[in-house]
Structures are given as structure tokens and as C-alpha cells.
Length: 259
Ligand SMILES: [Zn+2]
Image 1 (spheres, rainbow, N blue to C red):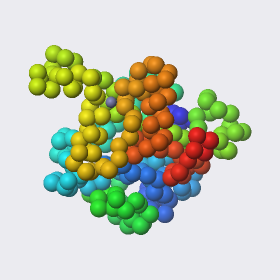
Image 2: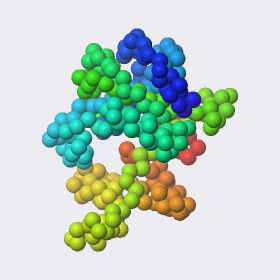
Image 3: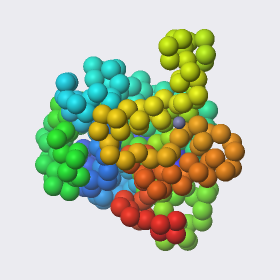
Image 4: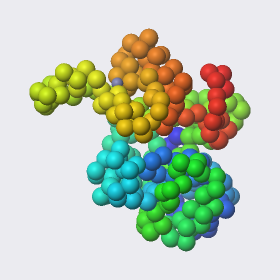
């Protein structure tokens, strides 16, 4: 099922799915909001589909200081037909077709986006509400919903619906820069402290965060079991925006190792 959209890709997406009642707010990050399809089944959707929709980018807001320059001026590369093509045809080759979803860019109208924006507003987290959906984006990203479907080659159908736990990790940049590109003034720090850890210390120093996670992507990618375990425990201890657990298609706000 993981590549259900690959099988369905020749099928036309029916127009009737573009009504806000058929989409449930699932989650959001700094740049995108995600909605899960809940309408009538259709072969082109396989019943397990999400839309990833870009939010407004307000130049000059303090939040953007932590966002890359490119995303302030241009749509995220993943949110373009070229980005979807890259993810589908190159990333899937790297990871293997069973482990990466097919993405499709689909055309949507402003009325549908406006309805989604209004219907989801009150259930969004307070600290996210200052940025709304971009009403005039012509296309959004359609992809598999891993919070409500577990690939059939990984687990048997009879226990799929009952188990149905999804873990989302945003691991961040997991490599140190090459010494030859480091300025002498920064080399003593940047050669040993990763970009993510420097950024979280900056946020702490500037009071954008009052507590930071002990998570370090270098631990997660280290291949050392103890360090990898430490990274995962740090994510669970203070998930921030890097770790989420869904059960039965819904985000768990509080969870333990045994859910
Ligand atoms: Zn680090």
C-alpha cells in the first residue's frame, strides 16, 4: 500500500473531493499544514491520503529569522511540481520504492483553501494561528497518509488497524561541515558542534526557547547504539518540533514508551 498513489497515478482526481468537509486537520509545522482525507473512498485516493498545504510567509516576522532565506522568497522546493518529481523519481530510488511515497502536485482553488483555513482555525495550536493558509497557491501536494495506513508488506492486514501507531522524526542536519570550508574564527566550534545544536543554543540565548532538547542529530546518525538510544530518548523527553507520535490517525499529545 505504501506506493498506492503510484498505482493510482494515472487516475484522475475527482473534483468532488475538494470540499472542506472531507478533510480533517492533522498537524502542521512552521511552513506547511497537513489535512487527512476523510471523504468517500475513490480508487485515485486509496482512502489514505493527505494534503500538504503551504502557509503564508510574512516577511519580517520574527519567526522567519529561523527560516531559511530561500523559503522566504520562493516556494519550498518540495512544494513544486519539480520537487514532487524529484522526491518521487530520485529519493525513491535512493531509499527503495517500498520506503518512500509517490507525491503528486494537484491543482486546487482558493475557495477550497479558504474553507479549510476557516474550518481548521479553532483547532490549531494557538502558537501557530498567526500564519494562515496561502489562499492563492495554485497547487498543493497529495501524498500517502502514514498515520492511518501501515504498509501491507510490513504488517499483516488483520492487525494493521488495531496497531496503527506512526512515529514521525524530523532528524535535522546530521553532519559536521568539512574543515576546508570553515573560517578560522569559527573552526574550533563548528568542527565539533553540529548546526542543530548551535541553533538551539542560539534560541535559548535569545529567549526564543526557555528549554532545549538534549537531542543531537550526530547521535542519531552515529551508528553507535548507545548514542542512537540517547538521541531517541532526548526526542521523547522534549519532542519540540522534531518528534511526533500518532495513534489511530490522531496526534498523541502525551505518550509513554508504551503509548
Ligand atoms: Zn548536535
